[in-house]
Amino acid sequence: DWRDNYMFADSFSFETFKGTKWTAPYRLRLPENYSIEKKYPVVLFYHAAGERGSDNIMQLSIGLPVAMQDPDSPLYNAIIIAPQCPLDKKWVDTDWRLGNYSMDGIEETIYMQTALELLDYILKKYSCDKSRIYTMGISMGAFAVWYTLARHGERFAAAFACCGAGDPSKAELLRDIPIWCYHGSLDGEVPADSTKNMAKAIEAVGGKKIHYTEFPGVNHWSWDAAYGSYEDIRAMFREVKG
Image 1: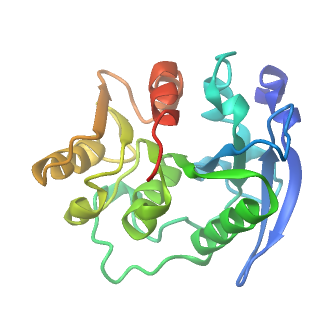
Image 2: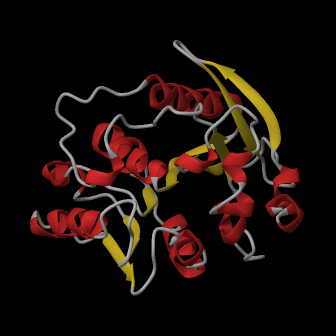
């Protein structure tokens, strides 16, 4: 059982947030020596499809546990927010199997809206460094990262997206955002070129802050390799907005 292996989840409190259109279960982690005298970076983490539900547990089962096996990870000094999307719902209402898609005509789901309202709530309630807000996501959650950046990119200092897809036509909106993104070459769930297409589109409009890594011979389960890229996570945290 993953919970036996990743006791780190015990450091996340169980919370709920009543948004405008939905009440979200979420987990919250504050730095161990949290103090209102300091300003902390903030991470909004979007989980994958397999972690949907209402138990407020499963969203911490993949990705973050691997990243936080690094004892020096900057994640330990960040405020981490991990909302949980309901069973059979999506952060972004698109067919994952098709990969890249057009955002035009696809409205922000109430689940993503609520996640962003939750972010606003955390920014007001806790001592946060608003120049260091990051978003991370896996698979369905990486779709959310790309969508969030295209709609609200001005809010984020940098991002981390694994095995998802976005809208390449929005590359101009993403050009100046530092983004670390990953995909397995043998991904059978989300087309393997989906992330590469985003990176190429951003580079084509002059973007120089996109960092794409393809894992040869790796299937959809590429998050262990991505979230094990400790130096990349450290590099992301060095990015500051403004």
